[in-house]
Structures are given as structure tokens and as C-alpha cells.
Length: 115
Length: 115
Image (cartoon, rainbow over all chains, first blue to last red; front, side, top):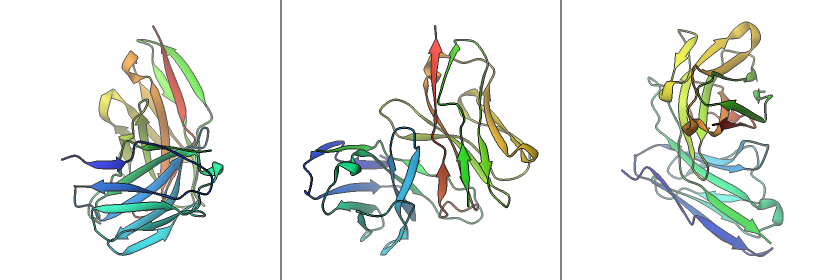
């Protein structure tokens, strides 16, 4: 199993450009998450999904959109990139089982720079 | 609302010395607590978690943490650190057993190991 993978690993954008970050998991997990990590601020949740076709806003959703068309994929879109979106983006997934203690599994991250 | 405080931004300890990383949380009900580790350039890996039961929790890599409700703390400890423990450590609190709820991360503590 590859676990959680993220594409691309690095990207440089100019202000106003758009891009999509792809997250894929092969563990058949129900839940998927997008976080951003900034120095001194830990991880902040952008959006999450509790199943195929559903998404919800997290702590810092502005400027981002997401889609979960397939269970294994969770896409994060930036329609018009801004320098404030320079960050490291992490995707995570977790199973859903009320009887078990659930753990989030993280991808390796995407480092995005917006000039 | 949930919140997590990691008061130490950066800690340096000598190899072989003991380690304690502090974590204080704020939550009105019984919290679900986690410690994650992030090695340079990597995603986050779960070290240990507390949901209920014994307040001393054992994790991977020789780490343990103790939940103290009276102090709203969940400090991470290791009796003897190794150079490979150099990383960033994140404490996190969740509102329910299911990870579909938002997990709030602390700002992290960077651990350096002195040879």
C-alpha cells in the first residue's frame, strides 16, 4: 500500500494563477482532510470530507475549494493564488468506525510558493 | 472551543538525556488527545493517543504521555533520547472519538539533540 500520496511535491505559482493539488489514498478510508502548515502555527484544517461527494469547511477555508468525486481522491483547488497561500499543504485520511479509535494518516506534503 | 498550547517552541537535549514536552489543552468535556511527530520534509506520524482508560499511554519509539485532567495537560516523555528523535512534535486535541471531528493541533515543539 502506498498510503496517502500527494501530487505535486513542489510548486511555484504567480499571483492570480490557479492550480489543483491532488491527494490519493489506497486504504479505502472514508474521511479525508486538507491542512496547511505555517511556521509557528501548527496545522490548520482547510476542508474535509466524510465521504464521496461530500465536503465541509474547516478552520481556514477562504480562497480554497475542494472536491471528492471518488472515494480515494480529494482535490484542493486554488482559483486565484495569493502570496498568503504560500505554505506546506498536507492531506490526511482516516477510516470511519465508531467502535475503534481512529487515526489520521498523513501524506508527505506539497510545498507551494506564490510569488 | 478546543485549543492546544505547546509552550516550548524549541528544546535542545543531550543524547541519552530524558525528555518532556509540554502540552496543555482547553476543552469542556473529555478530550481525545494525540501526539504526532514530523521528521524534516515528512508528513506527520502518530506517536500515541489517549481516548479513555489508563492515563499513562505508551506509544511508538519508546515515547509515553500522561493525561492529567486536573492540570489539563498531556505531556510527552521519553527516558533517553536518541539522535533520531530530532523532529517537530505536535500535540492535538479532538472533540470526539471519531476523527471526522476536527482535530486541533498545537503550534509544535522543535526538538534538537545535542551529541
